[in-house]
Amino acid sequence: MAVLLLAVGCGSPAEEEDTATPVEGAPTLRATVGTEESPDAFEIALVDEDGQPVTELPAGEYNIEVNDPTSVHNFHLSGGDGAVDEKTSPTEKIETVWVVTFEPGDYRFLCDPHPSMNGRFTVT
Ligand SMILES: [Cu+2]
Image (cartoon, protein in one colour):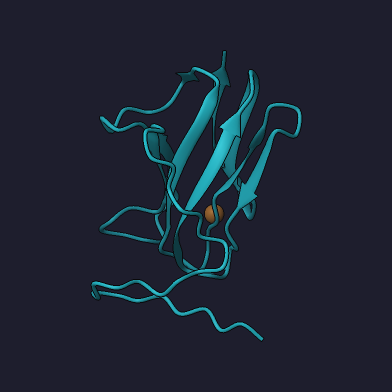
């Protein structure tokens, strides 16, 4: 049985089975739930490299740095008619990287236990 460890304040994060190797040259997005000050805050966000909320993206491959520092929320990203469906666990605190290929279409992200925490964007 795999034991998942979250390294806190440590230079070498534990390797997670579902942590992908970031693709060089692919844009990086950041997916977060909660806030730095308050991990349990009812906030969810997907931002680009400049920290701007994602509303529209060109299709292609992306690295998504996921930060889910809370055991009450999760981050669930899906869309593109099934092109992408990735999520963290609501009960698990995790930092991970997803490598996804966005096909044109509508996408949304939400917290499954609190679906009013959500956002959407379009890939063209
Ligand atoms: Cu939630």
